[in-house]
Structure formats: structure tokens, C-alpha cells
Image (cartoon, rainbow, N blue to C red; front, side):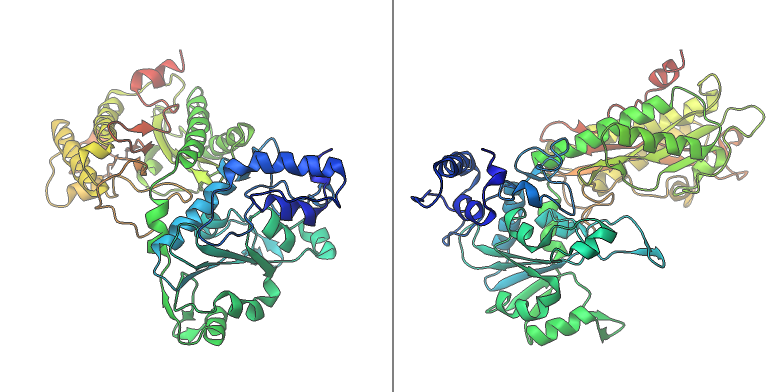
Length: 514
């Protein structure tokens, strides 16, 4: 007897309660299956505050005949998700813990409103690949458009909150065109909403959800150019006089420190991305677009979701253009064929990203010239030193690490014959040493870089030198662009380099062609 064959309503009710009541009306085989499921799920269902709610934290409550969802779940994609996971690597329990932590940090009488991301169109009816609004995904695991999540704090104990999820109801005719979406029942049974409803009826459903709320935290756009938006007008109608406040600072405090599961996802992305980049170093490339296509292919065949961002594949002097993403030129177009290629690329896994930059010689021999070796070594030394300081015990912030790396680069460039004055360093090294990484490439926007790094922070370390073609700089370095970047998880006493498979030592790079 498979539990997915149990009647949906019966199974949903039974696994949502801690004790299994007598059910003489059910066949014995159904009772046995429910008993086994209840015991299996009991360790995963903590006491939820002072009011016991139906929170199963399992995708087991949906019969096989209804397994059509708008995103992978374990029952349909066991090769992608383990039992209990809502998204790859992240369990339903962890999503609950995130919501509970957020609501516990808010003042009494608060609610959170999270609209999903909209579908964006390239032209006409041709849409871009959908990517969920990051905070919405972080708190729900639900990856469909036309959705709205509401969290309402209901008490003082951890877990005293109600989770409402409004989404599109099942519609066979519409889904024939756009593919399946999950529907209202799945919002309760799979994504563990306490209450769920049709997003088309949100205006009539929200007043009940927000009853007694005195403050709403949201990042939804309520006005545009001083004029209320559609969502702003809705809020005025259903919650007049209720104070609003930005949600992002509250969520940033949670997202900035990664859980072990998040770090594992980022490590997977870093490992497979690093291997792809190292493999790309083994041969010369004729065109930038060929190298970019190779990396995308390797990411996906390794099991990653794909590229985390538009890659930079910049040959020769284009490497001095920090965000060059045309990737359309020929490589090694100069006569001596000693062009470097700078690649800033990374994949993502379970929506968690990695960020890597490597610079290497794209000539037939795979060897650095003397000048390339000197400048590369200067950048590498600064990068190694900064990575080693990505530990909580050092008490340093990203801003302080930037200053340390800039000083190290300045000293080494002077040793190489650079006569530095005025704003020369800001021209040679014009960007910050690093940024936070996670669900977004530039994660937790607005989170300060002057706070001491904590265990669980994930950051990039990416010093670079970009030499303008100007007489005041040494001739043999002009036009070069070199950047070396790793994604690093801050530990207490030591960093964890998440992208270590991408080789960066000169000897290792050159050995790939031996």
C-alpha cells in the first residue's frame, strides 16, 4: 500500500496532528499506513507555539493522480529532491524555521506581505525564464508567479505565526498552454500553508488574514512617482491606517548567515563550477562565445541549474572591462598569441549561486609570459592573503579586508615599476574586494560591508588589476586585466573555500597543458 494512494483529505488531516486517533471507518491497511507515516514524521514536527496548527512538513499528502506541480517535488523528481525537501537541499522544516525566526523578531501585532515576482516578457507573449523574488523563495520555497504570502505573528512563543499562501487555482485549460501549476490544495499539503486561497480572491481574503495587525512589513511597491500602485491601493482598502515598514532589513539578518544546508548547496555549485572552469583551461579557445557555451553545458550536465549570471568571457584588452558580457570576439587575435582570457562565471544549485573568476593564458602552450606572470602573482598574493582572513576570529569586515588587499596590491605594483600617485589605485583596482553571496549573486542587498564577518557569512574575495593603455603605466603591463575570485564561507578559525576546484596557482594552470 503506497501512502500516496490514500485519500488526500484523510491523509492531510492525520499527518497534521501529533497523535493518531482511532479511525474505525478506515480500512485496516489505511490505518497501518497512516500509523507508519505519523511515526516517521513525528521527529520532523516540533511543537508549533502555543496554538497547534496543521503543519506536516512533508510532501507525502498528495495522491499520485494529482502530482502535477509548477516546480519539482520529491514525488515527481526524486532525482532532484530527497524526502522532506521543498527545494533541492532545503527541507520543509527549515522553511518553517525561517518563517518562525522572522516572525519572532518582529514586534507583536505584525504581519509580513510578500508578493511573488512577476513574469517578465521579452516581447509579446515571449517570456523570460521565471525567477522567484528571493525573499519570497527564502521564506516559502514556492517558485510560481501570481502568488502572495502572508505571515502573521500570533503570540510570543517560537512558531506562533500563521502562514497564508494565495496562488493560482488549478486550471486544466490554462495549464495546457503554460505547463502545470501547483494549485491551492498543494499550497496547504506540500508547502504547508496554514491557510491557502485563490490569488484572484486575495482582496476579499486578506482582511481576515490581517485582522488585528498594527504594522505590516513589506517590500512591495506601494507608490510609484508619488501615485499609489495597484498593490498600494489594495493595502489602503483592506488595511487603512496600518503602519508599513521595509521588510528587507529584517530578512537580511536571517539570510546573511547561511545554514549548513545552504552552505552545502553553495559548495555543490562551487565544486561543479570550479571543475568546469578548470576543464576549460586545458585547451585554447578560438571564440569567447565557444568558451561561454562550454561552461553552460558543463554546469547543466553536472546537475547544476545553469549559469548563476551572464558570464564574462573577455580576451586580451577586453579583460580590463570589468563587466564585459558581449562574449562575441575572437580570442588570440594578436600576432604573438599570448592573450590572457578572463572568465567570471559560476553556476547555481537549488537557486544558490557561486561566483568565480579566473584569468589564464589562452595561447597554444598555455604558458604565462614574464609580464603576465608578474602581474598575476601580485593579484594572487593579495587574494590568498585576504582569503586567509575570512574567519570570524580575525574580527574583520569586508571593508577592512578591502583596505588590506588594496595596500598589498599597491606595494607589489610599486615593486613592479608602477609609479602610483593620486587616484591611480582606484583606476587600477576600481571595485570592492568582495560582496555577500547566497540566493543572489550580490546577496542581501543593503546589508552593510562594515560589519565584522561572522561564521556562516558567505562572501567573494576578488582583487583585480586593470591597466589602462596610458604612457604613465609600464608598457609591458598596458591593456592587461587580471582578476582572481573565490566564493568563501567564513568559519570561526578558518575559511571554507567553496570554489577550490578552479585551479589558480600558476604551476597548476600551466600543468593542465602538459
